[in-house]
Image 1 (cartoon, rainbow, N blue to C red):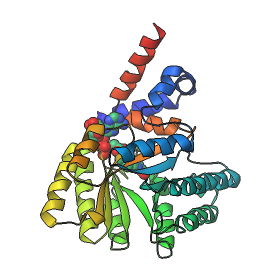
Image 2 (cartoon, protein in one colour; image 1 turned 135 degrees about the horizontal axis):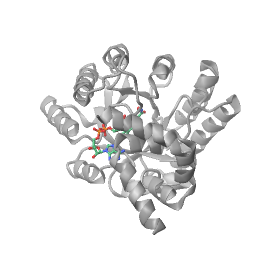
Image 3 (tube, rainbow, N blue to C red; image 1 turned 120 degrees about the horizontal axis):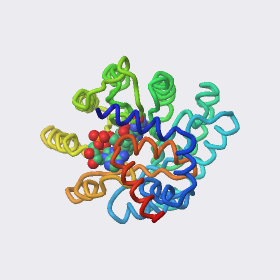
Image 4 (cartoon, helix red, strand yellow; image 1 turned 30 degrees about the horizontal axis):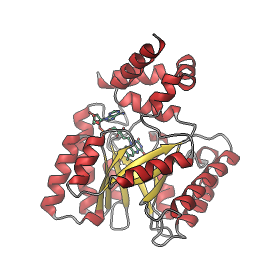
Length: 311
Ligand code: FDA
């Protein structure tokens, strides 16, 4: 049922008429503002400052994916370099960045992508300590290439991490391959609609896989970013981390901008490290559709607000 609702939302939001309505209407832009603080780097940095005031660290994501040319990919790398330089000018912020490899040219070729990633990593390494750069994980067709690029670079750039998705059947094996003291891994459930041959379809299986992979990563000495808003998973993780006496240097909780601020605040009040993913930029539509598909109630929220606005 959940998978069907998700598929329906994604199908609807891919229709060009709906895309135009959401992108161009005021209710659409207002709704996007709940998940994306604004179009510019300054908007992202303001959001990071606001989070810092609440004891929360930030991770900037300049929105964009599947760019069509090497020029666009190089331009995307430049935007991250600017983000690194500008956040460095604000030493009061604990701010790292997250990139999508298809935004940095993966579709144009692994070499194009690696050149761009390295330009970003070199600037990230200029600060002391180096600013962490995370790779988002995209749809399953990109997992092999993303992990290959990550493994080929992490020896030279230790402040590099990657996201894994517990919905994918392969992920436990991937965690065994990349886990270890040199690994920095963001653990998520996965935001893409994936077919049954590659991904678990039942929520209980996705959650079980999340716990299994997260435990393996911690036991192998990896640094773990627990990226979820699921209270049951967060509660289970807190109990496990406390019982095993895991140092706060080795993990943090992560959530998305605009989601479960109450849970973020509760974790901060309990002395837990929390970081929020702050997406910014004009290319917010695909990001927004994933947030809608995760929680179809968001669609009804949008539609009812749009109708209220029109009446
Ligand atoms: P789940 O979907 O079960 O939600 C638990 C609760 O959280 C819900 O009951 C609701 O209260 C709240 N919630 C969740 N989503 C919401 C929404 N959209 N709107 C309102 N409330 C919502 N995925 C990926 O494929 N690649 C990636 O690189 C990343 N990166 C990433 C970074 C960070 C910091 C986070 C937190 C998440 C990601 N994700 C991701 C997204 C992730 O895979 C997943 O789709 C979402 O986090 C939703 O799953 P939850 O674990 O929150 O659980």
